[in-house]
Amino acid sequence: MVDKKPTSRLKLFALNSNRPLAEKISKAVGIELGKATVQQFSDDEIKISVDESIRGDEVYIIQSVSDPVNTNLMQLLIMVDALRRASAGSINVVIPYYGYSRADRKARSREPITAKLIATFLQMDGVDRVVALDLHADQIQGFFDIPVDHLRAESLLASYFIDRGFKEADDVVVVSPDHASVSRARRFAERLDAPIAIIDNRSPEDINTIPESVIGNVKGKRAILVDDMIDTAIKIQISAKTLKEAGATEVYAVATHAVFSGDAALRLQAAEVKKTIVTDSIDIPERKKFAALEIMSVGPLMGEAISLIHNRESVGKLFGRD
Image (cartoon, rainbow, N blue to C red; front, side):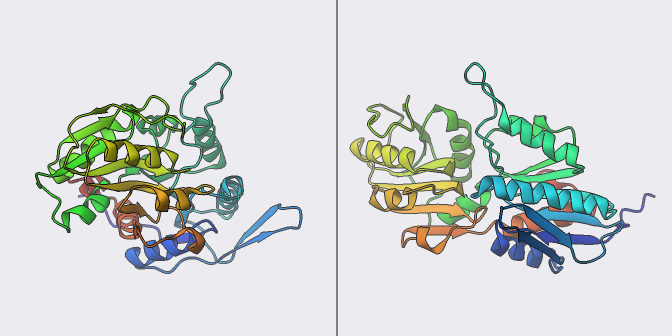
C-alpha cells in the first residue's frame, strides 16, 4: 500500500498584496505564516529575504496580482527565486486574483497575450503548482505546463442568497451582464434553481450606451447580476439601469474580484443596486468600502485546497466530485 502521508513540512508565506486574506488562509490550514521580509529601495527596486529555513519544504506563497499590479507581480517572482535558491522542496503559488487575465487571446492584430506571458514567467521562475481562483477565462489553465488548481467562489457567493431564501423562489432571476459571462451566470443559477437572463450589451464599457434588449424575463423579479470581477463598475451601472427599465424590482451585483478601479465604489453607490457581494480575493481599502457592500472570505476555501494538496487528496472534493 502506498503511504499517502506527506513527507515534507508545509510552509505558508504571504507577500504584501493581501495580508488579511493570507492570515485567514493560514488559520484555515492551521499553521502560522512563515517569516519573510519585503523591502523597497528608494528607486522602487524590491528586496526580499526569507527569514527561516525552508530546505526540502513544501512551500506556498500567497499573493494576488492586484493593484499595484506590476509591483505585486515582481514581488511574487522575486520570492519564488529566493525560495528556489534556498532549496525549497516544492514551490506553489496561491493567486487569489490573477492579474492580466483579461489579455487571454489576440482580439486584434499585433496584440500580446499577457496572461500567457505571466504563466511563462512563473514556470521559468521555478513554480511547481498554481492555485488560482475564478480565472477570467478557463483556457488560462492551458497556458501552464504544470498543475493548476482552478477554484471557484460561486458556491460561497450563492450561499449569501440561499441563506436569505432566494433558492427556488419564483421571483429570482440570475442575469449575465453581457454575452461573455453567460456560462458563469448559468452555473450560478443552477445553485439557486433559478432561470437566467442575458443583457444584450454589445459595448459593455461604453457608459453612453444603454442596452435596450434583455433576453429572458426579468419583469417583477429580483435580478442577480453575476460577473467574475468589478473593475470600473461601468458595466454594473449600465446593467442595473437596463434591468430596472425592464421591470426588475431589485438588482444585486455579484463578483469574485473587487478590482474597484478609480471611482468604481462611487458608481456602485450611485447605481440602482441594492447590494454588491464580492470576495476578499483582493484587499479592499477602507476608503472604497460602503454600506451596501458585502465581503465574503475565500480564506477557508483556499486553506482547504492547500490542505488537500499537501495531503495528496483530490481538490475535486471542493466541487462535489472525487
